[in-house]
Each structure stands twice: as C-alpha cells, then as structure tokens.
Image (cartoon, rainbow, N blue to C red; front, side, top):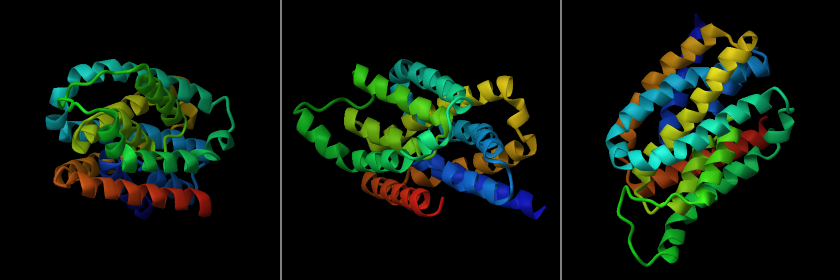
Length: 253
C-alpha cells in the first residue's frame, strides 16, 4: 500500500508539472527505478500512464485551445509520426545514446523559452494576431524531432516544445502551453499504442493505473492554478524546473 501511494503521489506531481511545463517523467521514472522496477518496464509503463494526465490537461486548457485548432491540425501529424518513430527506436537503440544529450537539449529548451520574446520582437515589426500562424517547415521539423525524442524517452519534452514554439509563434505563453499539451500527449499516446501492440511484456498495468490516477488529478490542479500565472511567472517556472531537471540528469543519474 505504501509503494502504491508513492506511485500515485509521483503521478500527481508529474501530472501537474506536465500540464504547465513538462519534465514530469523526471519525477515518475526515477521513482519507479527506486522502487525496483527495471528501466524498460518503468519507461514504458510510465509513458502509458501519463497519457491519461495529458488528456486531462488538454481538457483543462480547452479554452486556450479553441483559437488554435486549425493550427494544431497541421502540427499534430508531425508529433504522431515522431512518437511512433521514437517508440520503435526504443527497442533498437541503447538508451545511453539519447540520455547523454538530454541535459543539453533541456538547457537549449530553457534558453529558447527565455529568449523567445526578444526573438519575436526582432523578427517581425508587424504584430501577429493571436491564434493565427504560418506553420513553416522548420517548426514542423522541430516538432517531428521532438516527437521522436518524446516517444523514445520524453523527459522534459514539454520544456523543449515550449522553447521551440516560443521562437516561432507570436503567441501568449498560456496558449503555447495549451498547444504543447496537445503535441506532447499526441506523442505519448502514439508511443503508448505502439507499446501495447508490440511490447506488452514490458508493461506493468498496475503501475500504469496508479500513475494514470495520480496524473489525471495533478493535471486538473495544474490547469486550474497554472493559467492564473502571468507570462513572466510561467516563464520563470519553466526555467526553474528545466534547470532542476538538468541538475538531476547530470549529477544524480
């Protein structure tokens, strides 16, 4: 019962972090390893479990999503393709090949979040109406690459997506957060389907259920209180969590 409670609490924490920033896997994945689950079982089971929290977070941010539905239809396919590719690579490539570069990617994501507004101000003298965007090849390619990463491992995927879109979109950060939730959940859902079909022997359904319960509640709490944060406060939260993730990955893994 104590172990189950620990997993639920980790799922709740991860659900709240994921809906706001991302990097919830840096809570649940190490927790499962600490409790004795094999790395591949922990990774696959966690990926499936957080899908429920992602869907809950999308619902919580539905108001911010309404103006961006046409835009999402052009980006979600890249996330789906990337998620499926990353899930395939999980069983082909050694985990060390991605884990080595994860801290660098997270740091890059944090940097993009910080400089995003300045880049937007410099790149365009004409304001872009909220909810209206031109989806360029560079943005689609970036979403595809991050989808591959998310399907493979996914730690701090949300930080990277937020940083990427902060560079390309002249949009309120809360709406970028809502878009990020859809893209990250699309990646996780695609990878989860692939795992269920091709890797059931790596799934611990009890762990999946416990994380799902915790992440659903956490995502609703995150959506409810997170949208009250100002862009500056949300940006600061992303930076703090991103830097904490780097410290965790570099010094404690």
